Image 1 (cartoon, one colour):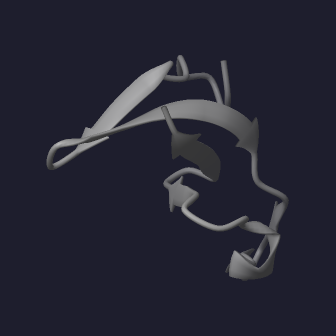
Image 2: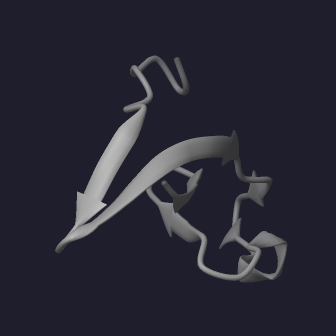
Length: 52
């Protein structure tokens, strides 16, 4: 759970599958993209996914 909502284990973007990796470090101004590794994606509300 994150912010009172379940975290989807897997998401899809077109034909690519991503799996949950970690919660992003965010503040009142948002989430820095500097914390992403190559090929990772950040979705609201601050969840980082990596390719499956």
